[in-house]
Image (cartoon, rainbow, N blue to C red; front, side, top):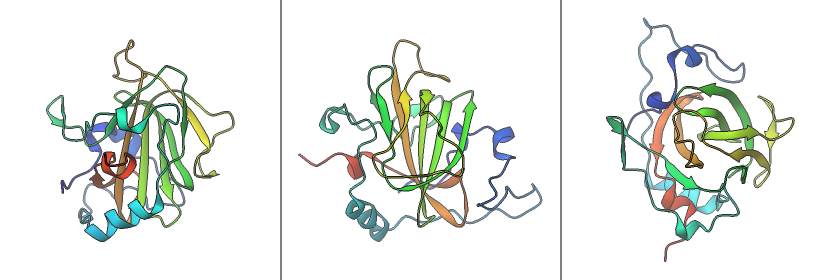
Length: 190
């Protein structure tokens, strides 16, 4: 299991802002928090949650696993789901919208933290957020939270959802954790 963070997709300037419900970013002098280890029990828990596929109009079995692909010298650590621009994107699990922001690589993004505050779901390259979506808002599994696009560093002619799951540290920071491959957690085995 790869251990790291989504730092390649999060700008340092954005990480310097914090959400009141979660631990603020430590100062550079602070020692780094340990990277959470993902166990088979974690994977089993997520399988049992039966996470909703984030782009309902796309058949999960048609989506290629892009988790181990390379992107600009770093691991992708996410699932790219090609879809028509404007296709609805839904919450894969019930949770709280922890951060909404535009970034250079991810474009319009959403961080959704599950109710246990152990896992985060990251949505990027969105064309738009759902009407009235706000930080701190609780959303239900299957609720529309945004729309597929190609913002950020995505090719304008290739709209898709960049979707990631990661296990948070014991004191959650919405931008840091251990990446998990979403494909086997979202796509039924054939």
